[in-house]
Image (cartoon, rainbow, N blue to C red):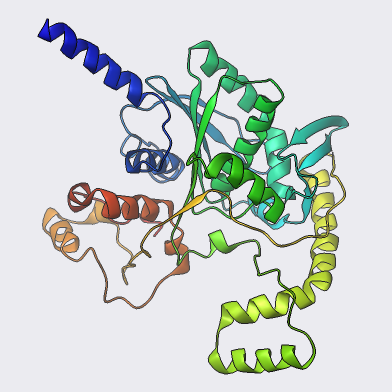
Length: 388
């Protein structure tokens, strides 16, 4: 009888593990940032077997789509994972990032003469990043096909994840898929989002709706290193426009004396907002033409007069990454040298913080281990990758 009860409890625990639960789970963050490192490890070593958790089975890798975008699909028990690749060093990938004029969060994008309906929010004032919205429109047919395949296997609990640009796509794909569910498609699916080092993807109205629906119930997260510049992009500032005339100049003088850059930004940008909005929207018309010539013929909705981005997802903040002064390739090190390096792994005396390393996907993985899994962190053989 005890054996039967034990087996029932074991099965119940496995069933519970295979459901998506509310709340930030370090084990989920650890596994998913490891999955996000798949692209880096494949590029550097030709294999991701050293980083992807054994319980995650890769079942699909998309072709390169649009502006050098790729996504992977994994299965683990009764869970699915869709992982979006971050920015690459190709021009097209950075065009996607720079294409930051906002379009309405609901509308039609014409791609090669085909009208593609999209819906990321219901609020008519909500607006989203043009480049990322276009990418979701391009990826959507294959994403939907892969979700149908997961559903056919009885998998309806799905993680959406990505690092950097891929994190923004994870959030935006979440909004897209949830709105499909609201319209009756994929209503059985439950999604949970973990984005790492991601730029912002929409305005205040979009972020407010997204966070109310998906973050306030503890089912969407942005994991951020405060010294990483990317999560502060494209642009964010306080919207209160209450500094004018002599008050403006007095405040400006005081802030210059104090050297308070964030407050200077929040003071200046609202005053220059009309000029900045016009510049960004006009320059993005050129980007739109470049995309049409180089990748696919597109017609985008008219840009909105908003350039102020806000974060989506509940913020989970890591400690700033400690950066070694010397780039280290552990593959060329002896066991003794590795051991010596491990004793110096905190690197706290190093005052140089290389911004590119503050945004490294592997450093995000290391930081999560350091914060939540100290014993595993101590046992790491690879504290740096050659790219760092």
